[in-house]
Length: 434
Image (tube, rainbow, N blue to C red):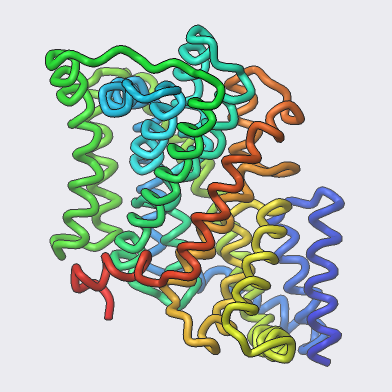
C-alpha cells in the first residue's frame, strides 16, 4: 500500500504540474488523491482541510508577510542605486570592475530585499546600461547579474530560510540566519574570482580610483539602507527580539526610510505597494498550507521512511548519499521554484540526512544553496528570465556565458556540503546553536 500511495502521490503531482496546473493546487490535489489510498475520501477531505488551517497557525510564519512587505518597500525605495555606488568604491579598481560591482551590489541588495528576482531587476536594471556603455558584452553582463542575484537568499534575512526552519520542525530561525552568512559570502567571492579571471583573459577594463569624497558620499548614502541588516540581525542574535518581531521592525524602518528619509515612495503609492506585498504573501502561504497537507499524507503513508530506506539500500556512505541528494535537488531546482521544492523535499531528505549524522542546520543551508542554482537555469529559473529581460538578451544566448559561473557555484556548493563548519561555526560561536 505504501508503494502504491507513493506512486499516486508523486505521479499525480508531476502530471498536474507538467499539464500547467499551479503548483499549490497540484500539491493539494495530489495529497487528496494519495490520501484516498489510506482513508475514505470524506475523511481525507476533512483531515487535509484541517491541516491546511492548523498548519498556518504558526507564530514563526507571521514573519513572512512582514519581511515580504519590507522587501517590496525597499525595492521601490531607490536602494539599488545607492548600493551600486557603494560597490563601485569597494571594487571599482579591479579588472572588469563593473561586473564585480554588480555582484557586490546584488549581495547587499539581495540581503536587504530577500528576493533574487527583485535584486536581478533592480541592480541589473541599473548596471546593464553602465556595462554596455563600458564595452561589456550584454550576455556577459546578464550572466554576472543572474548568477549573483541569488546570494541574497543565503545572506539573511531570507524568507526561504524561515520556510525551511518551520518545515524542518521549528528549527531556530536566528541560528539559520547566522548560518547563511559564510556560505553566502563564499558564493559571492567565488563569482568575483570567476569574473576576475574572465576579465583578465578578455581584457575588460577597470574603473577610476574613487576619491575620499566619493567614498564618504557613497557610505553616507548607503549606510541607512545597510542599517536595516544590522538592526534586524543584530537584534535577533542579541536576543532583543524574535525573528517575527524583527520582521515588523523591518517594515517600520523600511517605511521610514522610503517615505521620510529618501522620499522615493509618495504616500499615494503605498496602497499599490501593500497590494503587491499582499499578493506575494498570499501565493507563498498558499503553497505552505498545501504542502502541510501533503506532508501529513506522506507521514501517514511512511513515504519519507520508505525513501530513506531506499537510499540507504544504495549506500551507507555519507559522501555517496550527499552526492545523490545534491544531484536530485539540482534536477528539482531546474523544474521547480524554490519555495515548493523546500516544502516538498525537506520532509523527504531530512530524515536521510539525519540518518547519516548530518546536522539539520547544515542540511538546510546546503539545500537552499542547491536550489539557488536552479533559479538560474531554464526552463523555470525566475532569476534567469528576469536577468535576461533587464539586459535585453535572449535566454539561449546567455547559457554559455553562464557556464563558468555555474561551475563556481557548484564548487562553492561542494565546499559547503563537505565542510559543516562553514555553516555551523557562526551560529555556534554566537551561542545560537549547540
